Image: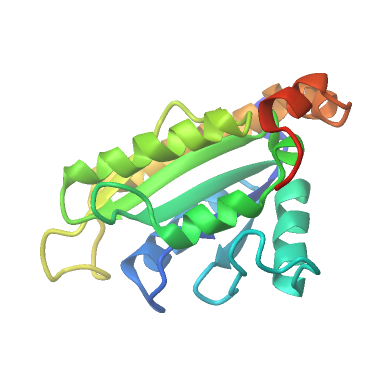
Amino acid sequence: MIAADPCRILVLTGAAAPFSRTRSVAELVCRATASIGSTSVLRDLAEHTLPLLHTDPDGSSALYDLRTQAEQADGMVWVTPCYHGSYSGLLKNCLDHLHAEALRGKPVGVVTVGASLTAVQASEHLRAVARALGCVTAPTQAVVVDENSTWGKDTDPGARNRITRMIAELHALAGATALLRQCAAIADPLLSIDHGPAT
């Protein structure tokens, strides 16, 4: 079966603060990935500073590492706090640096962390970004709500279950979309139409 094949999942967490709630949720995603026999790579963007897009023509080592990890991953999970109804600028800058041709056909899961269920807006925005990059989003997404001071002691079982289900879907999609990812390695004439020359 497709889901029997282990895969490599890159987990990007987009909170600027160290030891954040978002980082804790990303670690939960990594544990869920390990529980089904796959490997996760956690990249905390608070620990790996990236230049703003088009401001570092030579490219930093952190940027090179990010692109390499994204290309090598069979799937990705984007974990973000919800700021003013959308995802973080830190994650936005990270995604801007990724090459669409390396991500086309790659499965992506989305997890948002916020004070209420309105954080789902950030999830929908990220799903739109994934589509623009040619990725395939997992049907299940998770919104983790921190309504009280018990954060770190317990996590809402519903959110935990949705994360587990999402990882299982990514695991299956990684195999199901393998052909799409192989086709992505072939030059797509539409890319020059969609994106035009770099500015």
